[in-house]
Image (cartoon, rainbow, N blue to C red):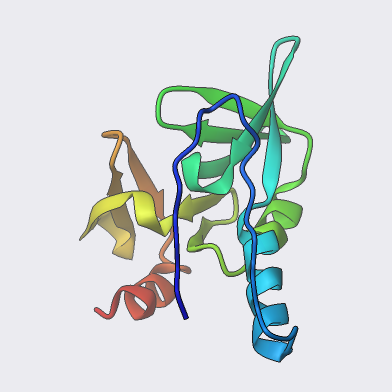
Amino acid sequence: MKVSIQEINRELEEEIIIRCHEVNDDILKLINTLKRDSSILLGYDEDKIHRLRFTDVYYFETVDNKVFIYCKNKVFQSKEKLYALEEMCQGKNFFRASKSMIINLTKISFVRPSISRRFEAKLDNGEIVSVSRQYVPALKKILGL
């Protein structure tokens, strides 16, 4: 199978074209994966609505019954509940780190043990977030520790 990639201007809409001899189960699985992985979520910033990619999200957090989306340099509010975002994150390298936080595993620089059997994760943007002790075993398993 040949794979080609062509970079385009940001003004143009991204598009994936699949050329195949027949549409079989493998092609349908590929299409479903692409649709799921390319999904967009909405982030609200005052009176503006932003389209965000899951790959740009560092973590989601609930504070005072509001859900926030943390990206590299900006924080947005979400209208989704944390459990709904967790469902949307299935298969996208996200990890439930506490009752109030979901972390993007691809944004973790390193983890280290902390007090009370918790872990701390330092993210690529320099932020340090805590992993509750309840979720540490699952994180260790994911990271192969």
